[in-house]
Image (tube, rainbow, N blue to C red):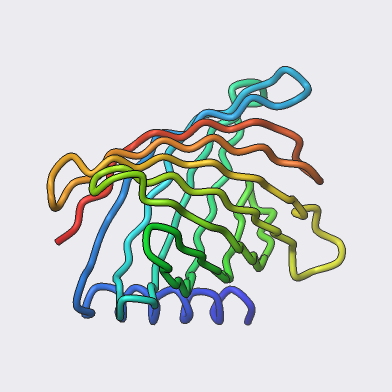
Length: 185
């Protein structure tokens, strides 16, 4: 039942995102360096839309391959974000519900992320965020806190280049680096 509910939420989110006014898509390469010395690599995608100037809906996915155990971990989540700008400075809050899939060990989770951003110029933006993520089942290990620092450069009106550094604490202790592009339709 939980898988069906998660799938229904994700499909509804994707439908709203693709039908709405300002859709976007992003693809990023992600590299994780765990405190244990092991590493993971994979990709993160995001499809969404700015429903209004302050409201964004998205579907995000991640596929990571462990370079040590050769195991594959996938995540799929639907999110909703609110933002407010005060001149060049802004704040945001994003909430999400998702599913983590690791070799048959599925776990639903939720996440909450408040943050802030500063437009350095018309084409450069820096953001800082804090994300709390936890499994909805008590017997699943998927509780992390992450601090993120990101940079976005508007290459053209419709293409942004992105870079992000993240530090995780909790059930996972690692540092992640992401780089990619956002395309606005």
